[in-house]
Length: 336
Image (cartoon, rainbow, N blue to C red; front, side, top):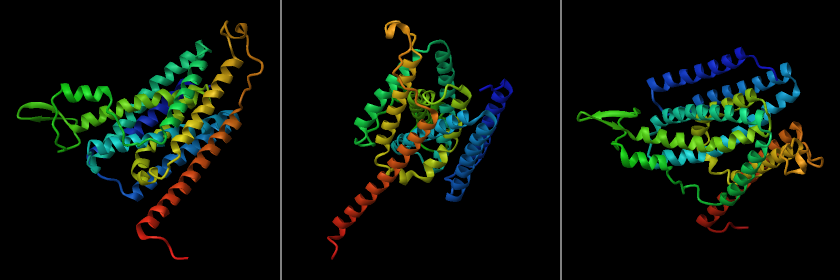
């Protein structure tokens, strides 16, 4: 896929302009967004992603168009899972609702910066070292197993990152939520606010999220431009999703298991690809492994859609049955 530097800079410029408008609007008028505002913005972001994917499909070919949609859906599903942690962070630090938009927006900007760095490093590593696919694949399989084992644990068991603990112990802080500023001056002394700590918590969390999201999408496409745009579109609507489906997230009880299967599938796909392109001398004498299958992007997209659809349906059915059982327990058995 041949993408000129002009297209790269136009894409980065447009994404930056959209974020700048958000920063100016929210900074000038901190508020809890209305449902209509959320639906309109989220619909706009999803619509732009679909239009962009269709454009890639038409102008660059079905292969790249399919890779974009597979990458975007994967990154979006991982981002939705990340919202659980965002909700816990907001609750733990008691962030007022009118300030949560700003915290999320800054967190999204940090996520884009971190992922941009990882995308660049990943692209350079893939271009120069084909064996890096072994590392990506093994890491995703490890993450998948860990996610599956922890899927049933209480999501409220959030442990503050080491960086946040260090800041809370070593810098002067105020506990007051007087504004959305990160620093204030009290009695002539400059103090960090709870917003500063929340931003640090979100930023650290975003950095950890990038460790599995970037290898995952590189398992679907080697095109750095598609990796970047899929991440941009996945993160653009994250703030709206936070406010719109916060309650729905609690009903997606099997989401962690679905994502574990998804990451495991991509991890195996990466290892198969590494075996097919093998250059390591201690594996098959440095030659490619003939039996290793190459999973097509069409199959990958079908698997991704299937996993997400089944996970969502089973989660909602399970949540519904649990709600009915709780209602029965509260009201007594129903008469037949």
